[in-house]
Image (cartoon, rainbow, N blue to C red; front, side):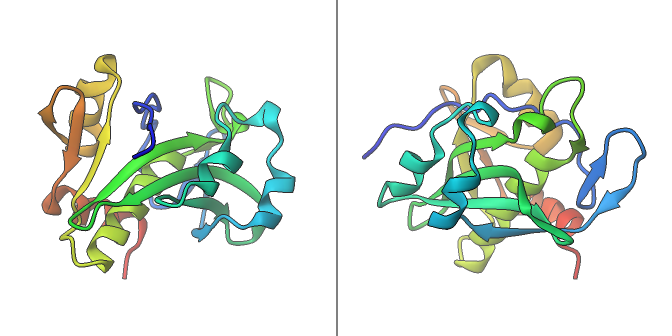
Length: 172
């Protein structure tokens, strides 16, 4: 099994899609599987992690979050691993312009986590998703995602919390 990294991303705001940080305008998004053509668009200076090597791992699938009306710009990325009874989020990251105090859009990490929960429901895993957290963010994930501490730094989102996230980001 290949190594994963503890989550270091903060959930800035749970929104209905993604929201412009200045104007408050909301933009509809979609999550798509990252393609080999997308690697040309991933400038190393915009990302903390090597997403091309992550996508090459046989036990992972990497997805990109884009605005529906502007699908060429990747807002964030998530790597998921199917553990056959739940989905494990191995890596998640917002594009450079969506990090820090001057970020353009709010809601990118929440949107990607909600997508992981949706995949879990779609696969019959009742929405269960797990991930490893940095110690200093455990309380943050408990509050924002209603995640539960399993052991050590490993956390899980249960069916009830997953359903709420999906309802927020993927309303029927």
